[in-house]
Length: 231
Length: 205
Image 1 (cartoon, chains in turn brown, green):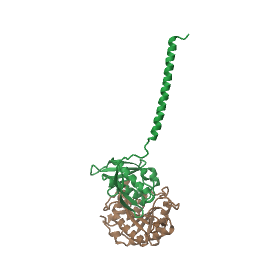
Image 2 (cartoon, chains in turn yellow, brown):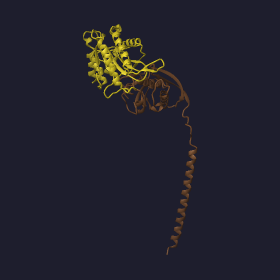
Image 3 (cartoon, one colour):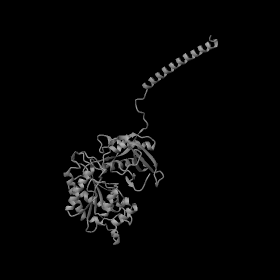
Image 4 (spheres, one colour):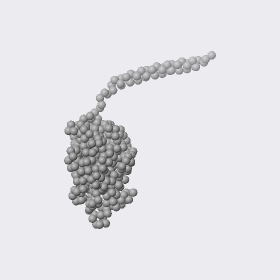
């Protein structure tokens, strides 16, 4: 099963092999695809928010907002789900890999912490190879994912949002062959740590979605998107 | 007419029966007194099982996504497995406190067991794998989220590394069985390296 996925990774990300440009990412052309992954769905409800809403619904709402903003800016957007469907982590990665995405964003919301939490995979960066293990395919894109995290952090901070950055194990994202991040929306807090907006607040989500769309726009023209090389 | 020997035998058996009844009553009274005496001398304070020592706990903070080492004094048993359980119990007690920056209920009772095994494929023969068995109640009550769940897992790994340097790898069980995630986000199916609190792919118990 993993061999077939490895071949899928090769096919999805390796058309450049035929032209001999092995180091060039598949996103360096004019086609710029953004994959939005609303986490959870179906039986997998995710967190229970204090408003009574489930994380899977709040994730989908944020996904819809971001998709609309990106489509309005002319981006081609692919989503892993458009309704309350259960989508396997491997299938989410397969959707992203077949789209040859330039950006992959996995969206979450939580009741804990403060502001927006940005996570890249904790895999050690690795050079791209002909066959990549399915579970660690993201390693070849790790450097670009970290550069993307910098661009998103910059845009969110510029929008006045509190941002924390980290690298953690990210099942699903670690199989994606694109610059990929997990974006977790926590409650907005004032300097006294009191909550001023819950993560499912529509205005708060719109503010974050606008900042994310700005970050993707900036990333499209960021030289590090195509110049970043694996260590 | 009853023979004489039967009369003598009857008297002897009657005396023996009365004697045994008296002895049984005395034994009952003695046992009752012993029971009452035992209740009054029962210990009211927990015995000290180990001397207090300094332990470094790596404490999570949800607000800035940080892990901060803190030194605490607590009784630490000599046995490494019990020692690991004691430090993790103290760490989870801190998380259960009202002023905690990483609110998780459950406390010390959430760590059911910690098993120390020889790490597979270890470079150093002394390297150990810690298997932390958490309770189902702890997992069920843990806040859900990428950040909060990862901080719990990573703080446990870092705390084990700080106090038991031989522990190089950590795996997690919940109620004795493998579980996909802690509360929907943090992956519990993989082996975590304490040196970098990062996972190693493809390893299994």
